[in-house]
Length: 181
Image 1 (cartoon, helix red, strand yellow):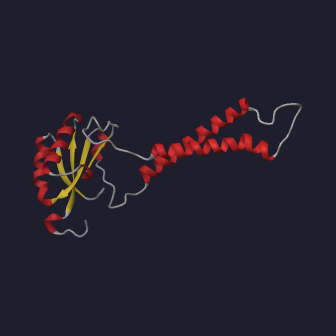
Image 2 (tube, rainbow, N blue to C red; image 1 turned 30 degrees about the vertical axis):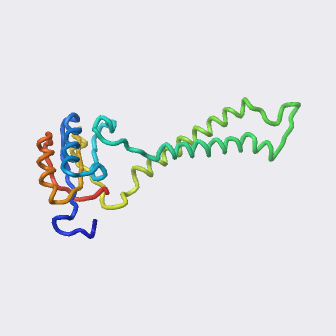
Image 3 (tube, one colour; image 1 turned 90 degrees about the horizontal axis):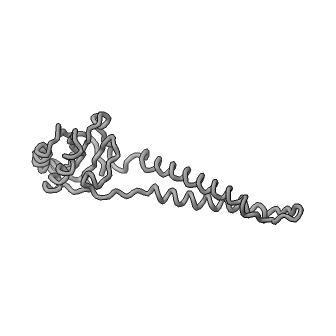
């Protein structure tokens, strides 16, 4: 995007809505103008499902972090229950070396601990790392229960996009600094 100059240079805009029911129509209007979904971002204070807002489903890597953490927790539980007994065998009064019922508790606890820690790390990685390009975009009205639709387009399409969003019920459509793509 750095190679574009003048009127074709992409700019970031934000449209503020007070009602969630107007957002799907506004997103459809943006698509009709020529703004694709990869250049649109919707922010709200309430976690609306992507299907409610008329957005494609958003995929995240957090469940993969959780599965890896659960697997590593299970392996560490196996090591502490059966690996330790194999490394340091201690036979006591006819009891078995590997006792399953007590080890199930430790296996469960370490599996859940690995899942929780890895999920927490995954959420931090996905939400707190700086974006690859540009600054994070945010509008203070989102904290006051408004819905912000950020979109990035060229200056030639910006006038059409503004008219379409205002016709869809946007309270304001302004140019902002930043980038999310």
